[in-house]
Image (cartoon, helix red, strand yellow):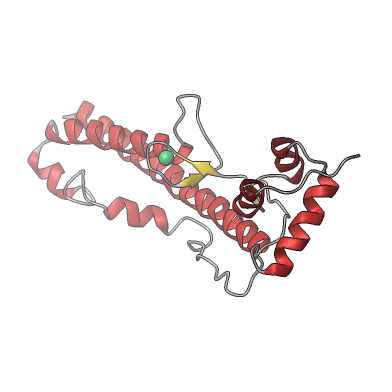
Length: 187
Ligand SMILES: [Zn+2]
């Protein structure tokens, strides 16, 4: 096998993509063997040009086009589950508002929150959710690989927590809607 000298553009590619693209893919792009890229990365590290390893972490999350948060659960409409659940919450609140307006004033004032758009129910819901909101971990001192893995794990955990809160909120909103409809029939 003849050894092609390394071009500056190839070194730059390795430095840019290291850790963000699998080694096999970097090698294919440069039309080099994986061994050759590994060896070159080692040389670049020695000179200080490359400050990270080639170890690639495949993220479980990607950016949602609507909320721009990193999420792992998506619906077929292309947006994340959180965005879809939030839309559902808004629609339930709108329904509640329409319903609330038809109730007699006396009953209106006796409803838990006094207004269908109050967050009183939301707080009631939050108390049902097991576990606290996950905190963003510090990645200080971690390798790039570990930092990426740790943050990705955090985004997945945060998303799961958020979904739990929204699902509880929807159950509570449906329950309230049901109570109001029952009362509406009695009026
Ligand atoms: Zn989203």
